[in-house]
Length: 335
Ligand SMILES: [Zn+2]
Image 1 (cartoon, rainbow, N blue to C red):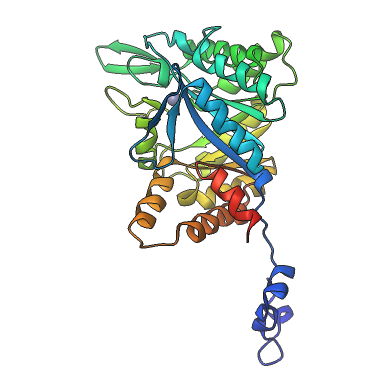
Image 2: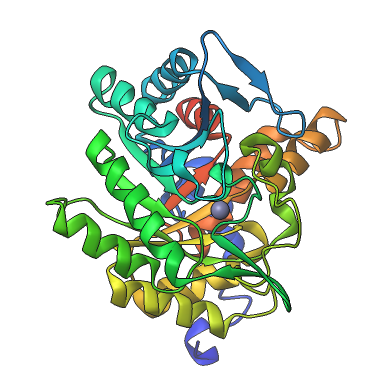
Protein backbone atom coordinates (compact mmCIF):
# COMPACT_ATOMS: atom_id res chain seq x y z
CA UNK A 1 0.00 0.00 0.00
CA UNK A 2 1.35 3.41 -1.04
CA UNK A 3 1.29 5.85 1.89
CA UNK A 4 0.97 8.83 -0.50
CA UNK A 5 -2.23 7.47 -2.01
CA UNK A 6 -3.90 7.09 1.40
CA UNK A 7 -3.65 10.82 2.10
CA UNK A 8 -3.61 12.42 5.53
CA UNK A 9 -5.78 13.75 8.31
CA UNK A 10 -7.62 16.14 8.34
CA UNK A 11 -8.49 15.67 4.65
CA UNK A 12 -8.84 11.98 5.23
CA UNK A 13 -11.28 10.90 7.93
CA UNK A 14 -12.07 7.15 7.85
CA UNK A 15 -14.92 7.70 10.33
CA UNK A 16 -16.90 9.49 7.56
CA UNK A 17 -17.85 6.08 6.18
CA UNK A 18 -18.92 4.68 9.55
CA UNK A 19 -21.60 7.25 10.37
CA UNK A 20 -24.73 5.18 9.80
CA UNK A 21 -25.75 1.57 9.49
CA UNK A 22 -26.67 2.08 5.84
CA UNK A 23 -23.31 3.64 5.04
CA UNK A 24 -21.45 0.89 6.87
CA UNK A 25 -23.41 -1.70 4.95
CA UNK A 26 -22.60 0.04 1.67
CA UNK A 27 -18.84 -0.18 2.23
CA UNK A 28 -18.85 -3.59 3.92
CA UNK A 29 -16.14 -5.75 2.32
CA UNK A 30 -17.16 -9.23 3.46
CA UNK A 31 -20.56 -10.89 3.39
CA UNK A 32 -21.85 -13.83 5.37
CA UNK A 33 -24.67 -15.80 3.75
CA UNK A 34 -26.53 -18.98 4.61
CA UNK A 35 -25.55 -20.36 1.21
CA UNK A 36 -21.93 -20.66 2.39
CA UNK A 37 -22.74 -22.90 5.36
CA UNK A 38 -22.27 -26.64 5.85
CA UNK A 39 -23.72 -28.46 8.87
CA UNK A 40 -21.79 -31.51 10.17
CA UNK A 41 -24.07 -34.33 11.40
CA UNK A 42 -23.35 -37.59 13.23
CA UNK A 43 -25.43 -40.64 12.39
CA UNK A 44 -25.71 -44.03 14.10
CA UNK A 45 -28.19 -46.87 13.80
CA UNK A 46 -31.41 -46.96 15.81
CA UNK A 47 -34.71 -45.12 15.98
CA UNK A 48 -35.72 -41.90 17.72
CA UNK A 49 -32.19 -41.55 19.01
CA UNK A 50 -30.74 -38.16 19.91
CA UNK A 51 -27.73 -38.75 22.11
CA UNK A 52 -26.27 -35.41 23.23
CA UNK A 53 -22.53 -34.86 22.91
CA UNK A 54 -21.66 -33.42 26.30
CA UNK A 55 -18.89 -31.01 25.25
CA UNK A 56 -20.84 -29.80 22.20
CA UNK A 57 -24.18 -28.33 23.28
CA UNK A 58 -26.75 -28.63 20.48
CA UNK A 59 -24.87 -31.49 18.79
CA UNK A 60 -26.24 -35.05 18.88
CA UNK A 61 -25.55 -38.52 17.62
CA UNK A 62 -28.68 -39.11 15.57
CA UNK A 63 -30.50 -42.19 14.33
CA UNK A 64 -31.44 -41.96 10.63
CA UNK A 65 -35.01 -40.75 11.33
CA UNK A 66 -33.71 -37.97 13.58
CA UNK A 67 -30.96 -37.21 11.08
CA UNK A 68 -33.60 -36.63 8.45
CA UNK A 69 -35.40 -34.29 10.83
CA UNK A 70 -32.21 -32.32 11.51
CA UNK A 71 -31.28 -32.18 7.82
CA UNK A 72 -34.78 -30.95 6.95
CA UNK A 73 -34.45 -28.20 9.55
CA UNK A 74 -31.10 -27.19 8.05
CA UNK A 75 -32.47 -27.09 4.52
CA UNK A 76 -35.50 -25.09 5.61
CA UNK A 77 -33.18 -22.58 7.29
CA UNK A 78 -31.31 -22.12 4.00
CA UNK A 79 -28.23 -24.26 4.74
CA UNK A 80 -27.38 -25.91 1.40
CA UNK A 81 -25.22 -28.82 2.60
CA UNK A 82 -24.58 -31.32 5.37
CA UNK A 83 -21.37 -33.21 6.13
CA UNK A 84 -21.99 -36.75 7.37
CA UNK A 85 -19.99 -38.73 9.92
CA UNK A 86 -20.97 -42.29 10.79
CA UNK A 87 -20.77 -44.19 14.05
CA UNK A 88 -20.91 -47.92 13.23
CA UNK A 89 -22.30 -50.63 15.54
CA UNK A 90 -19.10 -52.64 15.23
CA UNK A 91 -15.48 -51.65 14.73
CA UNK A 92 -12.64 -53.83 13.48
CA UNK A 93 -9.07 -53.57 12.20
CA UNK A 94 -10.07 -53.25 8.53
CA UNK A 95 -12.68 -50.50 9.04
CA UNK A 96 -15.19 -52.67 7.17
CA UNK A 97 -18.07 -50.44 8.27
CA UNK A 98 -16.54 -47.57 6.29
CA UNK A 99 -17.16 -49.20 2.92
CA UNK A 100 -20.01 -51.62 3.70
CA UNK A 101 -22.76 -51.34 1.11
CA UNK A 102 -25.29 -50.99 3.91
CA UNK A 103 -23.01 -49.11 6.31
CA UNK A 104 -24.56 -46.41 8.45
CA UNK A 105 -23.33 -43.51 6.28
CA UNK A 106 -24.39 -45.26 3.08
CA UNK A 107 -27.89 -45.79 4.54
CA UNK A 108 -28.05 -42.18 5.67
CA UNK A 109 -26.98 -40.86 2.27
CA UNK A 110 -29.65 -42.92 0.50
CA UNK A 111 -32.30 -41.68 2.93
CA UNK A 112 -31.31 -38.01 2.64
CA UNK A 113 -31.01 -38.07 -1.15
CA UNK A 114 -34.43 -39.73 -1.41
CA UNK A 115 -36.23 -37.39 1.00
CA UNK A 116 -34.29 -34.15 0.43
CA UNK A 117 -32.90 -34.36 -3.11
CA UNK A 118 -32.03 -30.66 -3.17
CA UNK A 119 -29.79 -30.87 -0.11
CA UNK A 120 -26.10 -31.41 -0.87
CA UNK A 121 -24.80 -34.43 0.98
CA UNK A 122 -21.07 -34.40 1.66
CA UNK A 123 -19.56 -37.49 3.24
CA UNK A 124 -16.50 -37.53 5.43
CA UNK A 125 -14.19 -40.24 4.08
CA UNK A 126 -12.02 -41.68 6.83
CA UNK A 127 -11.45 -44.91 8.69
CA UNK A 128 -10.98 -43.80 12.31
CA UNK A 129 -14.64 -44.13 13.34
CA UNK A 130 -14.65 -47.69 11.95
CA UNK A 131 -11.30 -48.91 13.24
CA UNK A 132 -11.16 -50.69 16.61
CA UNK A 133 -7.96 -48.75 17.38
CA UNK A 134 -9.35 -45.38 16.28
CA UNK A 135 -6.56 -44.45 13.86
CA UNK A 136 -7.23 -43.12 10.37
CA UNK A 137 -5.27 -45.88 8.66
CA UNK A 138 -4.19 -49.51 8.93
CA UNK A 139 -1.92 -50.07 11.93
CA UNK A 140 1.15 -52.31 11.96
CA UNK A 141 2.70 -53.31 15.27
CA UNK A 142 6.43 -53.82 14.77
CA UNK A 143 9.55 -53.92 16.93
CA UNK A 144 9.94 -50.18 16.52
CA UNK A 145 6.44 -49.58 17.81
CA UNK A 146 3.19 -49.00 15.96
CA UNK A 147 3.05 -47.54 12.51
CA UNK A 148 0.13 -46.21 10.47
CA UNK A 149 0.61 -47.74 7.02
CA UNK A 150 0.06 -45.27 4.22
CA UNK A 151 -0.24 -47.12 0.93
CA UNK A 152 -2.36 -50.10 2.06
CA UNK A 153 -4.78 -47.60 3.64
CA UNK A 154 -5.41 -45.87 0.31
CA UNK A 155 -7.34 -48.80 -1.08
CA UNK A 156 -9.76 -48.79 1.88
CA UNK A 157 -10.26 -45.04 1.60
CA UNK A 158 -10.95 -45.35 -2.13
CA UNK A 159 -13.46 -48.14 -1.48
CA UNK A 160 -15.19 -45.99 1.12
CA UNK A 161 -15.45 -43.01 -1.24
CA UNK A 162 -16.84 -45.19 -4.03
CA UNK A 163 -19.42 -46.72 -1.68
CA UNK A 164 -20.53 -43.22 -0.66
CA UNK A 165 -20.84 -42.18 -4.30
CA UNK A 166 -22.80 -45.35 -5.06
CA UNK A 167 -25.19 -44.46 -2.24
CA UNK A 168 -25.69 -41.04 -3.86
CA UNK A 169 -23.25 -38.70 -2.08
CA UNK A 170 -22.88 -35.39 -3.91
CA UNK A 171 -19.34 -34.68 -2.66
CA UNK A 172 -16.76 -36.88 -0.91
CA UNK A 173 -14.41 -35.34 1.64
CA UNK A 174 -11.31 -37.34 2.61
CA UNK A 175 -10.05 -36.34 6.07
CA UNK A 176 -7.44 -39.02 6.80
CA UNK A 177 -4.27 -37.14 5.75
CA UNK A 178 -2.63 -40.18 4.15
CA UNK A 179 -0.31 -39.24 1.28
CA UNK A 180 -1.80 -39.90 -2.15
CA UNK A 181 -5.39 -40.43 -0.97
CA UNK A 182 -6.91 -37.86 -3.31
CA UNK A 183 -5.33 -39.53 -6.33
CA UNK A 184 -6.45 -42.97 -5.14
CA UNK A 185 -10.00 -41.74 -4.56
CA UNK A 186 -10.21 -39.80 -7.85
CA UNK A 187 -9.05 -42.76 -9.89
CA UNK A 188 -11.37 -45.21 -8.07
CA UNK A 189 -14.34 -42.88 -8.56
CA UNK A 190 -13.52 -42.40 -12.23
CA UNK A 191 -13.14 -46.12 -12.81
CA UNK A 192 -16.62 -46.67 -11.42
CA UNK A 193 -18.11 -43.94 -13.58
CA UNK A 194 -18.32 -41.25 -10.90
CA UNK A 195 -16.32 -38.75 -12.92
CA UNK A 196 -18.65 -35.95 -11.83
CA UNK A 197 -18.38 -36.52 -8.08
CA UNK A 198 -16.29 -33.66 -6.64
CA UNK A 199 -13.64 -34.16 -3.97
CA UNK A 200 -13.42 -31.70 -1.08
CA UNK A 201 -10.11 -32.62 0.49
CA UNK A 202 -9.18 -31.89 4.08
CA UNK A 203 -5.95 -30.66 2.53
CA UNK A 204 -4.39 -28.84 5.47
CA UNK A 205 -5.57 -30.72 8.53
CA UNK A 206 -3.55 -30.00 11.61
CA UNK A 207 -2.99 -32.29 14.60
CA UNK A 208 -5.01 -30.04 16.89
CA UNK A 209 -6.11 -30.03 20.49
CA UNK A 210 -9.25 -28.26 19.28
CA UNK A 211 -10.63 -31.63 18.08
CA UNK A 212 -11.19 -32.92 21.64
CA UNK A 213 -15.01 -32.80 21.81
CA UNK A 214 -15.39 -34.27 18.29
CA UNK A 215 -13.80 -37.53 19.38
CA UNK A 216 -16.64 -38.06 21.82
CA UNK A 217 -19.17 -37.20 19.11
CA UNK A 218 -17.70 -39.57 16.53
CA UNK A 219 -16.34 -42.08 19.07
CA UNK A 220 -13.07 -41.95 17.17
CA UNK A 221 -10.39 -41.26 19.78
CA UNK A 222 -7.26 -43.34 19.11
CA UNK A 223 -6.87 -46.15 21.68
CA UNK A 224 -3.10 -45.57 21.73
CA UNK A 225 -0.64 -43.11 20.28
CA UNK A 226 -1.75 -39.94 18.57
CA UNK A 227 -2.27 -38.65 15.04
CA UNK A 228 0.88 -36.60 14.71
CA UNK A 229 2.48 -38.99 12.23
CA UNK A 230 -0.17 -38.11 9.66
CA UNK A 231 -1.89 -34.85 10.63
CA UNK A 232 0.14 -31.66 10.30
CA UNK A 233 2.27 -29.90 12.88
CA UNK A 234 0.54 -26.70 14.03
CA UNK A 235 3.82 -24.83 13.53
CA UNK A 236 3.97 -25.34 9.77
CA UNK A 237 2.53 -22.92 7.24
CA UNK A 238 4.74 -23.61 4.23
CA UNK A 239 4.10 -27.31 4.58
CA UNK A 240 0.37 -26.62 4.53
CA UNK A 241 0.77 -25.01 1.12
CA UNK A 242 2.66 -28.07 -0.13
CA UNK A 243 -0.09 -30.36 1.19
CA UNK A 244 -2.73 -28.29 -0.57
CA UNK A 245 -0.71 -28.18 -3.82
CA UNK A 246 -0.35 -31.95 -3.80
CA UNK A 247 -4.07 -32.49 -3.24
CA UNK A 248 -4.93 -30.13 -6.09
CA UNK A 249 -2.52 -31.96 -8.42
CA UNK A 250 -4.13 -35.23 -7.38
CA UNK A 251 -7.60 -33.97 -8.28
CA UNK A 252 -9.11 -32.10 -5.34
CA UNK A 253 -11.89 -29.79 -6.55
CA UNK A 254 -12.13 -27.92 -3.26
CA UNK A 255 -9.72 -27.73 -0.34
CA UNK A 256 -10.19 -27.34 3.38
CA UNK A 257 -8.23 -25.87 6.24
CA UNK A 258 -8.97 -27.41 9.66
CA UNK A 259 -9.26 -26.04 12.35
CA UNK A 260 -10.34 -22.55 11.31
CA UNK A 261 -10.03 -19.76 13.84
CA UNK A 262 -6.47 -20.44 14.96
CA UNK A 263 -5.39 -21.00 11.33
CA UNK A 264 -6.70 -17.92 9.54
CA UNK A 265 -3.23 -17.22 8.14
CA UNK A 266 -3.27 -20.63 6.45
CA UNK A 267 -6.72 -19.97 4.98
CA UNK A 268 -5.49 -16.66 3.61
CA UNK A 269 -2.33 -18.17 2.10
CA UNK A 270 -4.18 -21.12 0.56
CA UNK A 271 -6.82 -18.88 -1.00
CA UNK A 272 -4.25 -16.39 -2.33
CA UNK A 273 -1.91 -19.06 -3.66
CA UNK A 274 -4.40 -21.39 -5.35
CA UNK A 275 -7.73 -19.58 -5.67
CA UNK A 276 -9.72 -22.80 -5.38
CA UNK A 277 -13.00 -22.94 -3.46
CA UNK A 278 -11.66 -23.06 0.09
CA UNK A 279 -13.48 -24.39 3.13
CA UNK A 280 -12.84 -23.53 6.76
CA UNK A 281 -13.90 -26.05 9.40
CA UNK A 282 -14.84 -24.39 12.69
CA UNK A 283 -14.11 -27.48 14.75
CA UNK A 284 -15.64 -28.92 17.90
CA UNK A 285 -13.28 -27.12 20.30
CA UNK A 286 -14.04 -23.77 18.71
CA UNK A 287 -17.76 -24.49 19.04
CA UNK A 288 -17.36 -25.68 22.64
CA UNK A 289 -15.41 -22.58 23.69
CA UNK A 290 -18.08 -20.23 22.37
CA UNK A 291 -20.91 -22.30 23.88
CA UNK A 292 -19.23 -22.56 27.28
CA UNK A 293 -18.41 -18.88 27.53
CA UNK A 294 -21.89 -17.94 26.35
CA UNK A 295 -23.51 -20.29 28.87
CA UNK A 296 -21.63 -18.44 31.60
CA UNK A 297 -22.86 -15.13 30.29
CA UNK A 298 -19.29 -14.08 29.49
CA UNK A 299 -19.78 -13.46 25.77
CA UNK A 300 -22.65 -12.87 23.38
CA UNK A 301 -23.01 -16.18 21.55
CA UNK A 302 -24.63 -14.79 18.43
CA UNK A 303 -22.22 -11.88 18.03
CA UNK A 304 -19.10 -13.97 18.67
CA UNK A 305 -20.22 -16.79 16.36
CA UNK A 306 -20.99 -14.39 13.52
CA UNK A 307 -17.75 -12.47 14.05
CA UNK A 308 -15.69 -15.69 13.98
CA UNK A 309 -17.31 -16.84 10.75
CA UNK A 310 -16.89 -13.40 9.23
CA UNK A 311 -13.18 -13.57 10.09
CA UNK A 312 -12.90 -16.90 8.24
CA UNK A 313 -14.60 -15.34 5.22
CA UNK A 314 -12.32 -12.29 5.41
CA UNK A 315 -9.30 -14.62 5.53
CA UNK A 316 -10.48 -16.15 2.26
CA UNK A 317 -12.83 -19.02 3.09
CA UNK A 318 -15.71 -19.54 0.67
CA UNK A 319 -17.32 -22.42 2.54
CA UNK A 320 -17.93 -22.44 6.30
CA UNK A 321 -18.37 -25.75 8.05
CA UNK A 322 -19.91 -25.07 11.44
CA UNK A 323 -21.99 -26.85 14.07
CA UNK A 324 -23.91 -23.59 14.44
CA UNK A 325 -24.98 -23.54 10.76
CA UNK A 326 -28.73 -23.66 11.44
CA UNK A 327 -28.64 -20.97 14.14
CA UNK A 328 -26.41 -18.81 11.94
CA UNK A 329 -28.75 -19.14 8.98
CA UNK A 330 -31.59 -18.00 11.27
CA UNK A 331 -29.59 -15.04 12.64
CA UNK A 332 -28.70 -13.91 9.13
CA UNK A 333 -32.41 -13.64 8.33
CA UNK A 334 -32.99 -11.26 11.23
CA UNK A 335 -30.02 -8.89 11.30
ZN1 LIG B 1 -9.89 -40.11 10.71
